Amino acid sequence: GAGVSQSPSNKVTEKGKDVELRCDPISGHTALYWYRQSLGQGLEFLIYFQGNSAPDKSGLPSDRFSAERTGGSVSTLTIQRTQQEDSAVYLCASSKGLAEYNEQFFGPGTRLTVL
Amino acid sequence: KNQVEQSPQSLIILEGKNCTLQCNYTVSPFSNLRWYKQDTGRGPVSLTIMTFSENTKSNGRYTATLDADTKQSSLHITASQLSDSASYICVVSERGSQGNLIFGKGTKLSVKP
Image (tube, rainbow over all chains, first blue to last red):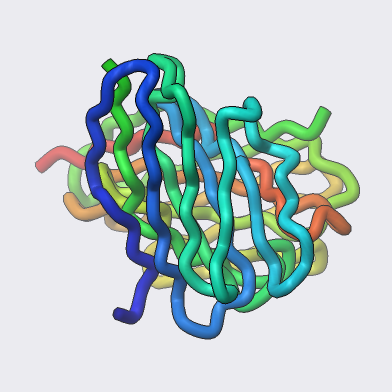
């Protein structure tokens, strides 16, 4: 496809369960970002990947959150032992290079609800 | 602390009217400022990107202005349409940050017929 895709679009889980969120960036984009958007709040940076460099994990809120990017393309955000405060929309974005200098293209997001 | 503040938080206007959204930031050193439109249930879509040397940029009926001295930006929407109903997000990039953009909370615009 031409844009960034994310799956699933909606995820409802029980507190304490693990979840995996997937992001397919635009082909050829070397940078990939994960953000979290809580109701009434701005986007919160979680992690980004740029090429083969070590990811910037400085935004991950706890060690329950992790992400990987395989083959420089698809990325998976994993949340272990989910808590109710993890409920939010998780957005993925990709860009040709670092977002500071390049336009970011966002996916539609995954709405996570933790019961 | 680097922050981006937007006002108003929400706005209701009639179709065909103009409106202006405001963004103030404290990000330093400054790299660029972007305005995004986010429809309900969708990801943000870029409207404009302005660097330090640019003080105005247009994209159709959307015109963004930037005053880097006062650290203020505005987004003016002309002849609003129902499809303009969305959240408008101001985003500032810190020079040298490599990738960590700072997002405002957005202004939720509702255009009524």
